[in-house]
Amino acid sequence: MAYDRAGGRVQASVSGRVRNAQERLRRLRAEPVAKPPRPLSFVARPVAGGAEGDLVTLTGVRVADRLTVDHLTVRAGEKLLIHGGNGAGKSTLLRVMVGLAEPEAGEVRRRGRIGFLAQEIPAHRPAERVLAAFGRGLGLAEEEQAELLLSYGLFRPADLLVPVGSLSAGQRRRLVLARLLARPVDLLLLDEPANHLALGLVEELEEALEKWTGALVVVSHDRQLRRRFTGRIRRMDSGRLLG
Image (tube, rainbow, N blue to C red; front, side, top):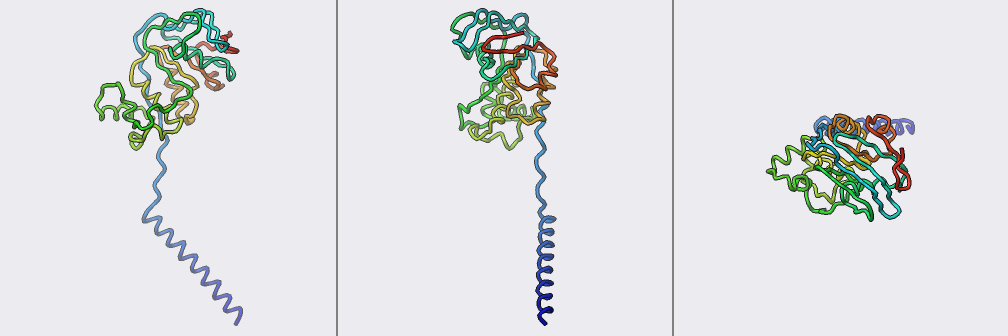
């Protein structure tokens, strides 16, 4: 009798688990789990401006002990990649080129429109929505702004009303990149463009830059990007450009 009672309890337990599994299966079929969203795909192509000749020229530039550039010129259509260790002065160089940092000595001459993607992007207006931040200064209706931003493949419709202060570091970089795409530029300055971006987006961005006809200066420690880069490559060390 003891064996029968134990066997009955085991059978009841198994039957209960089977019924529970069948109920979970029924619920899954009735309310299937939503598929994860497809990965973002960068499909935009930057639009080059029409400036010609020398776009940025640095002569005798000094910034404390961080940067010493005797002469550097970037011409229309030229591509330059700069690599080096942390603290080599790469970011300082780009900030001087775009005009966000003033040299203590020397001269910087600029022509044409310059677009700049910084390495670190703080949220200066954290309450501003993504769509409003993108469209600021474009002079487009809200519907046109949304259509243009979504066409780049950098954001989904649900992201457009998210406050900028709630964005991740990668999303803030995508927002700045989108703003760069919205206007023609003659020279793109990109500081570690692969930082905080998904691998697929990085590869698609590199493909777009390969077809870019404007001038380009990239700061990057990415060895794969360096291997594929088709322009000039220079190393920076202790604030000086070498090679």
